[in-house]
Image (cartoon, rainbow, N blue to C red; front, side, top):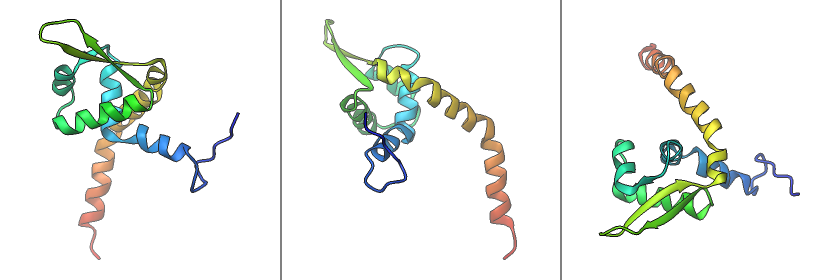
Length: 120
């Protein structure tokens, strides 16, 4: 087994961190944690994401084994996205991070406001 160290400049784990810490990746993984969804359902759930960004995010998550794409035998043909086992393993830490962000946003906004109103 290879030991990765995110403090090393060329460590592949940094790429992993970049992928799983991207805002859109976090939100899409959490949305898919509620169950499989079609593209249009994801666009509705994830406020503010453009079609292009959702497509890029789903593609990037798929290429890294976190999300799988499944063609639906419907007319017209549809596509459904779901988390893989690897993607589901991310839910707990990402949900914890998301809850932390929701719980502490007021404190962060207050801190930012205090810095911007402080005399020089």
